[in-house]
Length: 154
Image 1: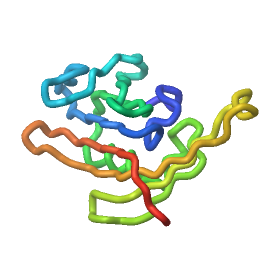
Image 2 (image 1 turned 90 degrees about the horizontal axis):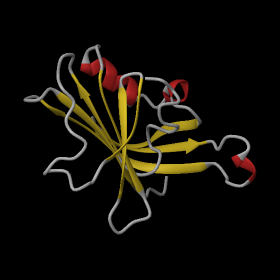
Image 3 (image 1 turned 135 degrees about the vertical axis):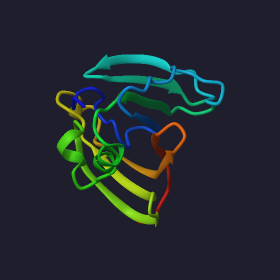
Protein backbone atom coordinates (compact mmCIF):
# COMPACT_ATOMS: atom_id res chain seq x y z
CA UNK A 1 0.00 0.00 0.00
CA UNK A 2 1.21 3.46 -0.86
CA UNK A 3 1.74 5.61 2.27
CA UNK A 4 -0.20 8.54 0.81
CA UNK A 5 -3.29 6.49 -0.04
CA UNK A 6 -4.79 7.66 3.20
CA UNK A 7 -2.83 9.87 5.62
CA UNK A 8 -3.67 7.84 8.69
CA UNK A 9 -5.00 4.52 7.52
CA UNK A 10 -4.91 2.96 10.97
CA UNK A 11 -6.37 4.54 14.08
CA UNK A 12 -7.17 7.82 12.36
CA UNK A 13 -10.66 9.02 13.12
CA UNK A 14 -12.84 6.25 14.43
CA UNK A 15 -13.40 3.20 12.34
CA UNK A 16 -11.54 1.30 9.71
CA UNK A 17 -12.75 -1.91 8.26
CA UNK A 18 -10.03 -3.28 6.07
CA UNK A 19 -11.33 -6.25 4.12
CA UNK A 20 -8.35 -8.29 3.01
CA UNK A 21 -9.29 -10.73 0.32
CA UNK A 22 -7.32 -13.64 -1.05
CA UNK A 23 -5.98 -13.28 -4.59
CA UNK A 24 -8.71 -13.80 -7.15
CA UNK A 25 -11.57 -12.83 -4.83
CA UNK A 26 -13.78 -9.90 -5.76
CA UNK A 27 -14.02 -6.97 -3.34
CA UNK A 28 -17.53 -6.37 -2.01
CA UNK A 29 -19.57 -3.33 -2.93
CA UNK A 30 -19.27 0.00 -1.13
CA UNK A 31 -22.50 -0.63 0.81
CA UNK A 32 -24.31 -3.79 1.84
CA UNK A 33 -27.59 -4.56 3.63
CA UNK A 34 -25.62 -5.73 6.70
CA UNK A 35 -23.60 -2.49 6.84
CA UNK A 36 -25.51 0.57 8.12
CA UNK A 37 -23.01 2.99 6.56
CA UNK A 38 -23.57 4.73 3.26
CA UNK A 39 -20.01 4.43 1.95
CA UNK A 40 -18.77 7.08 -0.47
CA UNK A 41 -15.83 6.11 -2.65
CA UNK A 42 -12.87 8.36 -1.92
CA UNK A 43 -10.31 7.03 -4.39
CA UNK A 44 -8.31 4.22 -5.93
CA UNK A 45 -4.55 4.02 -5.57
CA UNK A 46 -2.09 1.16 -5.84
CA UNK A 47 -4.84 -1.46 -5.67
CA UNK A 48 -6.52 0.04 -2.60
CA UNK A 49 -10.00 1.54 -2.81
CA UNK A 50 -10.83 3.91 0.02
CA UNK A 51 -14.26 4.97 1.26
CA UNK A 52 -15.67 7.33 3.88
CA UNK A 53 -19.06 7.55 5.61
CA UNK A 54 -20.68 9.84 8.14
CA UNK A 55 -21.30 8.20 11.51
CA UNK A 56 -24.97 8.83 12.30
CA UNK A 57 -25.40 11.06 15.36
CA UNK A 58 -21.68 11.89 15.52
CA UNK A 59 -19.12 14.32 14.11
CA UNK A 60 -16.86 11.35 13.41
CA UNK A 61 -16.11 10.17 9.88
CA UNK A 62 -15.75 6.42 9.30
CA UNK A 63 -13.11 5.20 6.86
CA UNK A 64 -12.70 1.93 5.03
CA UNK A 65 -10.12 0.53 2.64
CA UNK A 66 -10.48 -2.56 0.45
CA UNK A 67 -8.03 -4.29 -1.79
CA UNK A 68 -6.74 -7.57 -3.07
CA UNK A 69 -3.37 -8.41 -1.57
CA UNK A 70 -1.34 -11.16 -3.21
CA UNK A 71 0.32 -12.34 -0.03
CA UNK A 72 -0.80 -14.78 2.68
CA UNK A 73 -3.58 -13.18 4.75
CA UNK A 74 -1.87 -13.89 8.07
CA UNK A 75 1.28 -12.10 6.87
CA UNK A 76 -0.64 -9.02 5.69
CA UNK A 77 -2.73 -8.86 8.87
CA UNK A 78 0.39 -9.14 11.02
CA UNK A 79 1.87 -6.08 9.26
CA UNK A 80 -1.31 -4.03 9.66
CA UNK A 81 -1.59 -4.64 13.40
CA UNK A 82 2.15 -4.42 14.18
CA UNK A 83 2.15 -1.13 16.07
CA UNK A 84 5.95 -1.21 16.34
CA UNK A 85 6.23 -0.88 12.53
CA UNK A 86 3.21 1.28 11.77
CA UNK A 87 5.26 4.45 11.51
CA UNK A 88 7.21 2.84 8.64
CA UNK A 89 4.21 2.67 6.31
CA UNK A 90 1.53 5.03 7.60
CA UNK A 91 2.06 8.62 6.53
CA UNK A 92 2.20 11.11 9.44
CA UNK A 93 1.95 8.41 12.14
CA UNK A 94 4.40 9.45 14.87
CA UNK A 95 3.60 6.94 17.64
CA UNK A 96 1.61 3.72 17.75
CA UNK A 97 1.51 1.30 20.67
CA UNK A 98 -0.64 -1.31 22.34
CA UNK A 99 -1.86 0.12 25.62
CA UNK A 100 -3.57 -3.02 26.87
CA UNK A 101 -4.10 -6.52 25.49
CA UNK A 102 -7.61 -7.87 26.04
CA UNK A 103 -7.34 -11.12 24.03
CA UNK A 104 -5.03 -12.50 21.32
CA UNK A 105 -6.92 -10.55 18.62
CA UNK A 106 -8.34 -7.72 20.75
CA UNK A 107 -6.42 -4.79 22.24
CA UNK A 108 -6.50 -1.09 23.07
CA UNK A 109 -4.19 0.96 20.85
CA UNK A 110 -2.80 4.50 21.13
CA UNK A 111 -1.82 6.42 17.97
CA UNK A 112 -0.38 9.91 17.53
CA UNK A 113 -0.73 11.43 14.06
CA UNK A 114 1.36 14.46 13.09
CA UNK A 115 -0.15 17.42 11.26
CA UNK A 116 1.97 18.39 8.23
CA UNK A 117 3.23 21.87 7.38
CA UNK A 118 1.67 24.41 6.88
CA UNK A 119 -1.37 23.15 8.84
CA UNK A 120 0.76 22.47 11.95
CA UNK A 121 0.56 26.19 12.76
CA UNK A 122 -3.25 25.98 12.89
CA UNK A 123 -3.92 22.46 14.18
CA UNK A 124 -2.05 20.39 16.75
CA UNK A 125 -1.09 16.75 16.33
CA UNK A 126 -4.00 14.39 16.91
CA UNK A 127 -4.02 11.34 19.12
CA UNK A 128 -6.45 8.45 19.13
CA UNK A 129 -7.27 5.57 21.43
CA UNK A 130 -8.88 2.64 19.65
CA UNK A 131 -10.52 -0.61 20.64
CA UNK A 132 -8.91 -2.85 18.01
CA UNK A 133 -10.33 -6.24 17.00
CA UNK A 134 -9.18 -8.70 14.37
CA UNK A 135 -11.66 -11.25 13.04
CA UNK A 136 -11.37 -13.94 10.41
CA UNK A 137 -14.28 -15.39 8.44
CA UNK A 138 -13.26 -18.88 7.30
CA UNK A 139 -16.11 -19.09 4.77
CA UNK A 140 -15.15 -15.93 2.85
CA UNK A 141 -11.46 -16.04 3.83
CA UNK A 142 -11.74 -12.37 4.85
CA UNK A 143 -9.82 -10.73 7.66
CA UNK A 144 -11.39 -7.62 9.20
CA UNK A 145 -9.43 -5.23 11.38
CA UNK A 146 -11.80 -2.85 13.21
CA UNK A 147 -10.72 0.28 15.05
CA UNK A 148 -13.44 1.83 17.20
CA UNK A 149 -13.07 4.83 19.51
CA UNK A 150 -12.16 3.88 23.06
CA UNK A 151 -11.36 5.43 26.40
CA UNK A 152 -8.57 4.04 28.52
CA UNK A 153 -6.85 5.70 31.47
CA UNK A 154 -3.50 4.18 30.47
